[in-house]
Image (cartoon, rainbow, N blue to C red; front, side, top):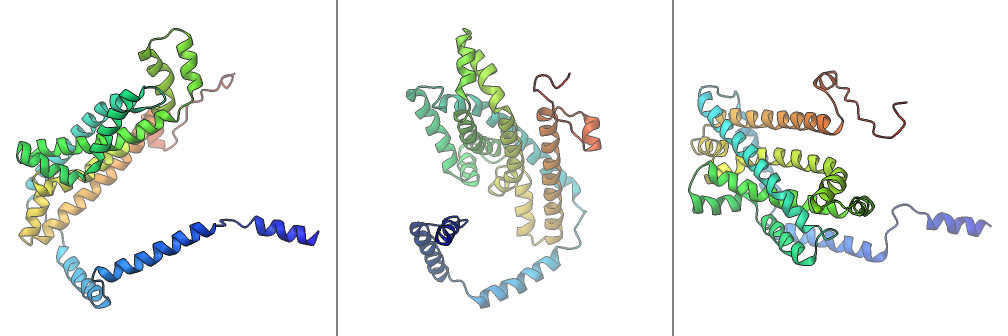
Length: 289
């Protein structure tokens, strides 16, 4: 009995790894050490970087408020780029995602749709922005197009996977009633993935707010161009003002995204949000009795 208990205790070791997993982990650690030796890392360089970083941070403060008109112009353009790109990306991702779902569509429709999504995800938004700057010139149009491509790549992939994970029983029940394909999508597919789609969309808007500052550095509009110019002029106090404004906008966007999710998914009202007590809608039968 003692041997059986000891054997059972040995078999129930939590997080037990096979020898293949352990060997793979060791190889990853060895390669990470090797890679660090090939990239010119050194402790003296790290120490000098800390000193230079401290000196740079000391030059950032206090923030400058002398050119607020330039700041607000760039911020407004970044917001417009992010909202337009998110809207276009979401609208274009819906049909592409539906066509890419292998549990709803035939292979001849899914492969081209998945290829479009993979192509949109292949390059970083900054690289795509450079391409569009060369194609349509400097300005916000290049930024909107670049972030639209990024939105299609992100939302298209995740929404396709969400559709493929739905229960087909509801789909079959709606089809059995003689509903058209559009009604199957509206009444059988969308109710199962709507919550996740709202989450994907709000996250992509938040991501585009951040990326709109990056694409501006390469001339695709937004506050990124203003930030890059301030760095080139060594105008670090104005750089600090821009960075603090960007951080405040990202935080405000996160709060707004939470409010949108609460309104759409939890059936919360504005008063509920102000009291911070959104009530989830109860759909189960018999709960109103």
